[in-house]
Image 1: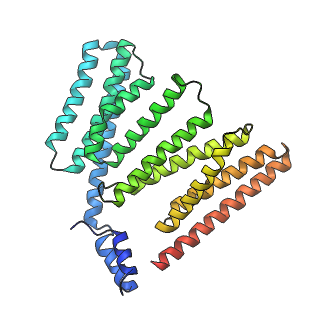
Image 2 (image 1 turned 135 degrees about the horizontal axis):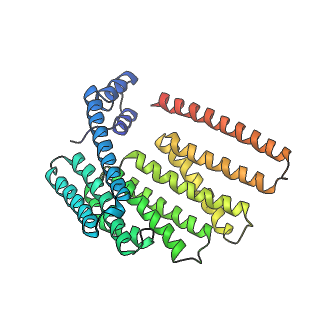
Image 3 (image 1 turned 45 degrees about the horizontal axis):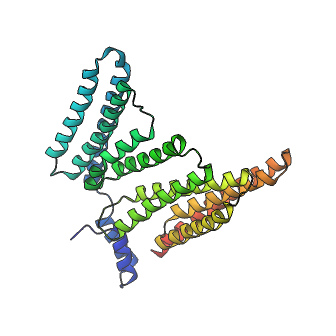
Length: 318
């Protein structure tokens, strides 16, 4: 039997005669962190920081000694470190968390190796195909590890590859089209991650899903702002319903999951969009800026107060 989660206990309490005190005791026993859990968290945190600083040190080593190292040494060191980290991941295969952390370091070393190769032979370390190759070569590690930080790195590489491709190859794509495609890409990944978590096929971290969702909303909001500040085009016919549906879906999902994160993201996206409208169609004088400042202060304050109220209400209902 797997570990009982907070959602499981809340679902049981809604369909049983469990009292509030029984629910509180069960949450403390099954879901709240114990001293051992905190010690394990600190151990893994120090391990992650150590691996991250080690990788950063390797990158700076190449950067500082680039002109003094021969080509064989540059590639040999990068390949040796990549091989070493991969072997360590195989050694620690019985400890999934250690294996996942080392695989993340190995994934970063793949990028270092490609960057070194690109700088030596002038194939380009800032071209989209560099990031595309990096993404493809770590795909199998992302799949087998199901590690949230590695998945986040993978998503960043996918977004970077797409942005560089749009700038270097598809130069005729306009800004709002690129941002809309990035919104669709991140939304698809977020929904897929949420579906896999719901089906309990992959243990996807909640913070990863929230990061992907926030990124998607940010790209869509950026598209709306661009349409507002620039001259409205025919693309607004597609963008307006898409924005309304997305904000509505975020609010609905937030209430369904009783999480204020998506509600806050939708609210602040609306505040930013309305502020852009006021700036675009208002007079460029002191009165407009004062009214805009007043609107932002009042709307943000009201949003925060409502979020606090609704969170307390949801906690009381639970």
